[in-house]
Length: 170
Ligand SMILES: [Mg+2]
Ligand SMILES: [Zn+2]
Image 1 (cartoon, helix red, strand yellow):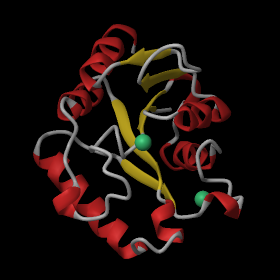
Image 2 (image 1 turned 180 degrees about the horizontal axis):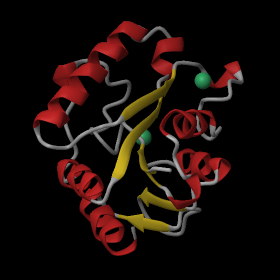
Image 3 (image 1 turned 90 degrees about the horizontal axis):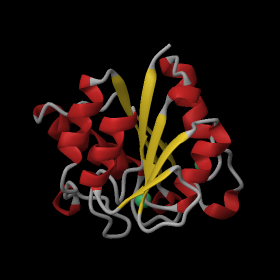
């Protein structure tokens, strides 16, 4: 069994400018490279789980998303910050799919694909729906970027705060 560090994308990996879909808008958050290097050093697979309703809303295409995903993976890989997998929900909230967070579908699929021990894994997100997806998937260790109180196990002001928590607890 493998361990996972599940990561939301917009607001965690990159700065959330709303419906980011071009490389020019893709700005890494401060500290994310250090966090991903730490995860790799601790033998956690970094797996991105991201709601991308901009596809259903036709703000951008699936191809735009996949092109940006390749860019993200290559950029991070070159910095020694590997991403093992990327899962995305292309649906709109009203579609009622099983993948859009807070549903656990993306995490469950990743667990199947990578033989992840969900009960010993972590998730970092910037919205309550990220934390709920973790809970719904049976991932106990969660960090919400933001202010307490929250449903998350921990909260952190920024990525450096998540590094402190992950370093101590993971
Ligand atoms: Mg987000
Ligand atoms: Zn979906």
